[in-house]
Amino acid sequence: MATISIASSKGGCGKTTLAILLGTELASAGYRVALLDCDLNQHSSAFGVKAAVEGFSVIPSVDEGNVLAAMRKAEADSDVVLVDLPGGSSTLALKSLQRSNFVLVPCQASLPDVRDAVKTFAQIDDAQDLARAEIARALIWTRVLPGFESRSARHVRESIEERGLPVFETALMERAAFRELHLTGRTPRQMGNQTATVNVAAITTELLAHIERLAAIA
Image (cartoon, rainbow, N blue to C red; front, side):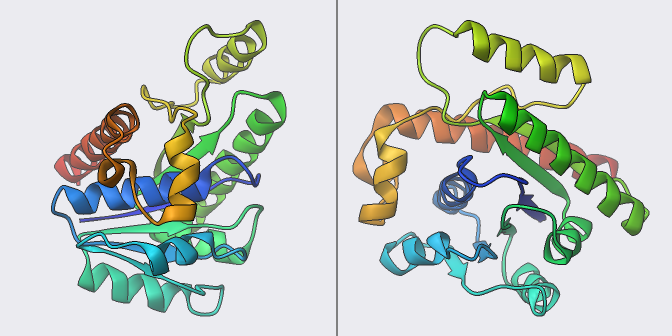
């Protein structure tokens, strides 16, 4: 159905956590999901060893040399392919981006993160130029604290709006359940954490709406 890359030029922005949450939530909704772990730290793979989510699998140790073959096989066997890319610019990222239907760029509400998000959007533009086809993309705010928006966070958000970059309406909130999944191998839905589950479900619904719109105009 779709290949989605999770990309950021910066580490520590919640990229792997977002990939795991989306993958497991889509699997819970009945989709067959493959998550390709391209990150050197292999945190998605470590989660995959512990996890038991029907329809969800993690493919470890995907690198520049095998990424295209891994993507082709995953696309043949799955409904949704998620690619957890490493931070920074690389040939690996360019290959994955060119083959993606959609790219999510996680970003925290800080100026360094925004600068790196802008770099990631430029890399998507490069991949789009190489592919000679439009690559849909959007920024998603991550690790957002519940409650009042600080002045600095508002300034960062407005700086993105001024650039006209597409942004998800739903943000990934800062929740203990999202950190704990790496320890337990269990998702917020499996743990019965309603607040965290609702947040993940809303992001997943928004992502599916984007994919459906792309399919409608294809």
